[in-house]
Image (cartoon, rainbow, N blue to C red; front, side):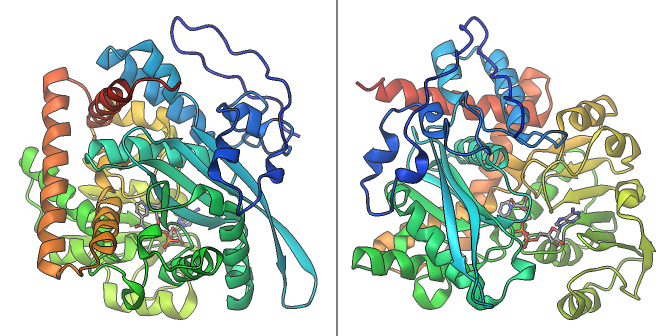
Length: 478
Ligand code: NAD
């Protein structure tokens, strides 16, 4: 078991003591009213004693020696709070997730034995609207990562001014080692376990790493079976055949490209003819590479979980996509030279886009970085140390909570479409997505200029100010 992590009190606040053990979270069953989950109102009550994975002090535990994304969230929140002069009450409120559900997910495997997986659904803050956030299937997923991703969603939905709060969920599993049948049974049982948290006015999941529209369709169907009515607005990123949204698939990548264009314009750099590096060639990285190429950029290096490839003349992306479809990785692609994954960021280019996992750019990577601009398509890809070095070196970073917000923006449109029962056409989706991203970029850029700080710090200020307005308007219950 990991040692207890240290809670970080707000400036001027008292350090939180260890709480008495509360109900085991596993006693919260699907079908129970969500108020059962809320009861106790303090996440430490839900977590305490629940599982060795969970911290007993309200801060989810992270395995020793691993990058701690929750600590990064708190550090960035503290910074935004100080810059914005945030009310300490609001600051304290944002330092803990609203509610954390940790679940066992037993699945009958194809060989007949039962495997028990660990899963989570976490709401960070819902002052501005229902929780919104993806579901991730990954072999190293832990509570700290899910909580951090949920908090990122709180700040992201505030930066793009959507009427949502922040949530995230997932299961620790390796989908690459599982059959389609096993994945479907896992998805359905996980959905059943977290069902009390979900609902169109409560929490609306979407795809994330290793989940896709097929997984969202299973989730939709399971909830429909449980509740006796099919509510398409309970999930986004669905297939078009069950109420999905046109252009949803490429929306995150489109939003990233919008930010690339905007930041290059501000820095007086041409887009056409310049070079880009992309880490990750999945649902975000792959369409992104094609869109950058359509914008006239040369994508000179691409990395993924299997390795990296480099071609200074520009990679042939169609051939690369065929290679990845056939082999599962960019590694071994003959249209470029093999590159060590650790050397990806030192490739010469104007733009670097991390579109894989968090913690991808640490201090050493930031020192090696040759690009002038980093646009964060992934969630949490730059560590705080990496961030400081990038800032010192004058490298402009468009932060994740702005750059990859195109996905949640399209999810908002899909939620609205499902509630309206009227399908939006592509022009409407594309034009509103572009406007939302451009407005958010302008807000953050202007705030960065007026405060004389990085875009990441400015985005944090914009987010906490909008959150504070909602929290204050609602007041404190009871
Ligand atoms: P995905 O599962 O479709 O693709 C992930 C990619 O990352 C794959 O190419 C994989 O090989 C690569 N990868 C995994 N581990 C790696 C490692 N250790 N080193 C290098 N590459 C590695 O996931 P996705 O949906 O494309 O999400 C990518 C990132 O974008 C995540 O941080 C996710 O949270 C974020 N994001 C996704 C969306 C969305 O709409 N899917 C929206 C906003 C943010």
